[in-house]
Image (tube, rainbow, N blue to C red):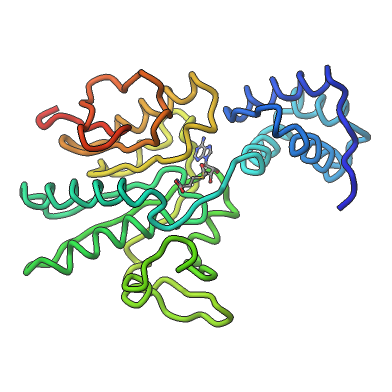
Length: 280
Ligand SMILES: C[S@@+](CC[C@H](N)C(=O)[O-])C[C@H]1O[C@@H](n2cnc3c(N)ncnc32)[C@H](O)[C@@H]1O
């Protein structure tokens, strides 16, 4: 790999401020090498003579900027993920869904917001499928997985994973919901895949979630932590708007600090989960 041209201290501070504003992502000092490499790569790939010309086009040419900002946000996003990433949180989400069914819900809508390559969305689908298997009557459920990163979403939609047992999946779920796809890879079975839809969606774009159905459960874990503080609140409010009465919104501990989305009640069994009260 070639070495990216370095930004001076001042240049880096301006680029960091611009990129944080434009993408909503937090870029601590530790990510400086990634920022330098990315900006240098994009300047070269778009035929700019250097950082200054790339900056000028990004800021002053809307047609250039629109596509470039999407790409920068996707490339700067942190995509690390696993199946059932925080098992205790998934267990609590499973209890919440079981409670919804006991309360008479016939159809479950679940949303993995900031799903990356889809492991979280399929984990939610497995939770719902396990509940469906324990009922005498059929259960309809749909999981929506969304992200700003088109490449990650394409991998999610393909549903093929290398060594999923090393990535949080249990052997029983592998046997029930996956089929071998060769060379240590496994594909999510069609019976589960058809319950999961992947869409590009930006949590910070106004009204862009309005087309999604109202949700019984929204999992937005390990996403807001990468956003700048006030954007976390913007995203959290938009997610809260998509909950059904009684629906649950789950973040990661520390995502919101002491703040909580208006009108929701904090759950006792999860450190960063909130429920829309029934009848609201
Ligand atoms: C670390 S991954 C988390 C994946 C999964 N939720 C988990 O807990 O394992 C963070 C994901 O959030 C996505 N993301 C970041 N900003 C976003 C935004 N504004 N709208 C939607 N997704 C975003 C990133 O593209 C990335 O795929």
